[in-house]
Length: 403
Image 1 (spheres, rainbow, N blue to C red):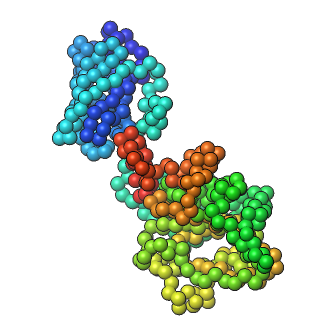
Image 2 (cartoon, rainbow, N blue to C red; image 1 turned 120 degrees about the vertical axis):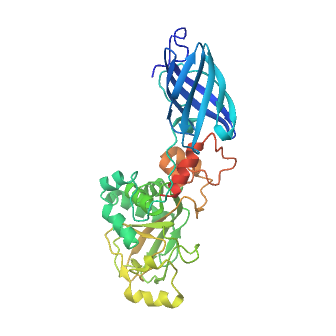
Image 3 (cartoon, helix red, strand yellow; image 1 turned 60 degrees about the horizontal axis):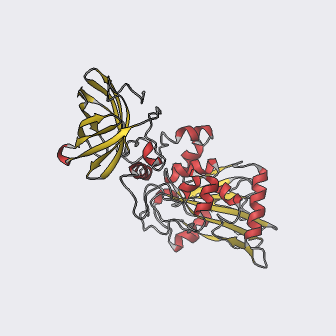
């Protein structure tokens, strides 16, 4: 689309940055227009609606009229009547039963045809269609499938959906796993026996952020707890010989039973040492994901008899969803079992850790994936959120919640 035009012969041709008054506020939009004689063709696109082709476009002198059909934020027909004066345009837009508003703007000098403006990047992207139905819990979304297939995680997704747990071996190279293990030991507060923990680990060393952003873990988190998921908490643990078993439980203690059919919380457990039953590996109780409830005290004790160990080599990530009954075996080996537990939450949940004091620095270093994990890519809990100016983020968040 050519932005510059012979304004004497065809005053409407070009791209026009405009603002449309509406009951939602002032909406930024772009008219992409081509004038041919007394006809107008092209599109209208905006921050609050998808690209719409012009219908019944006409022009007499410098006065033009056309209509477009919108489906977002609700189905409606918009009718425009505008006048072009050199590099300026003004007029009205009628929204049917929703009233009308004034239109004003100017011809764009560039020929890039985009809606991008320096201070309104979110409004530069046509809004994705709002997802009407929730994606079933066993289904890999179309957005995620190419990544899952590329990373060879289709079987892991099936295991997560059907059993509620899976193991990814060789999730990172040995040098990274050795660095992660060393850092957990250095940043944990250890007792005389060699047991300890490190809480709110994210900002303590870059290796923690790198672990949370691991591509395989991120893909499985999106499958299990939906697009736009958050980092709930990040805890390092060190367990020495003689450390007792952790009782059988499920992680979604914040939810009353019956637990949601869609998983709300996924734990990714980085095994920095070989996971064996004797070494205190995590145990899971088969079939409990489908129960959608917490174990009673009696069931917790009895479940150990049918539990299995999530045995895997160092460098693996053991993952389970928040409804699976699990615990760990006592450690009966010399040395220490060093683990990083990263939990990922569905987008609507509040995070377990407070990252407000480190968010800006981490986002500047790691970009959009970290911004998502820390809740900056959704509209929840944002004071004075601009639903009009950032309507794309609003729709994207709702779509993520249904994925």
